[in-house]
Length: 66
View (cartoon, rainbow, N blue to C red):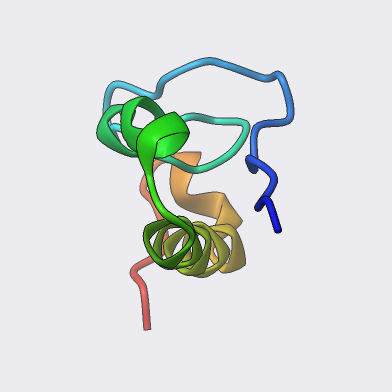
C-alpha cells in the first residue's frame, strides 16, 4: 500500500516557520518523502497533522503549540 503525499500544490516555504504553507512539511520532510518507508511517512503525516491543528502558525505572532 502506498501512502499519498500531503502536498496540495501550494508550494511556498515560510521563512519564519521553515514550513511549507500548503502541506506544513519542512524542506527535509519534503526531500525525504519519495525515499521514505511507510513508517517514516506515517511519522511525517502525524507531524503535519499536529501542525495543521495549529494552522495559524503563519500568523504574526503564531499561536504556541499546546
